[in-house]
Length: 226
Image (cartoon, rainbow, N blue to C red):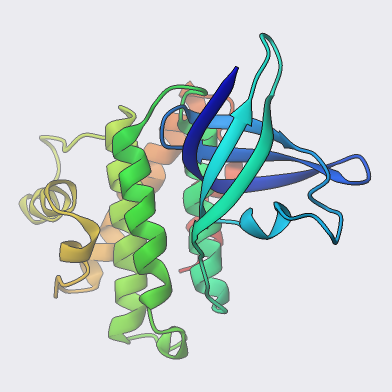
């Protein structure tokens, strides 16, 4: 059976000499595993359309009980950043989805949020990231916190609690009720980011206990690219 959809490549795994198995967040089928034959060959026409975090039009074939087989791919948009902090944030966001999202279940809200995330993330200015009190560093923290909060909430791991401080409730409510572009315009005390990170770390640890597929890297903010 043939399928057409769009998707983001979240992870690549070499398979044999010329093939790869791709973990893809697809628009219509959620998280899927796809066998891409021959994409490691230098003459492969499909290989250039399958870069990490880029959105791609996909044509897939599948037989019962088998992986999706990639038959064609054409790029929609590319993810371009030379900042290691930005790239680590993209990897951590991908791992969160791969480790928590149910396989082969349409996730339109998560797809839209990830689409917005990878569009906005490279706009963070990498030249200022190392400055402790820089606004840019705070914005990078902010977009990561917002993404994690939204994904954990959609998947049922996070809700605003009655025991949270009023200021923290207000901050999380703002994150959950607004899109990422609006959130990035927020000017607030960076100290709230530390509190929010701590809360989301605890939630991620609880999620790990409920879901054995959660990778430990998603539970360590140092690896998320702070």
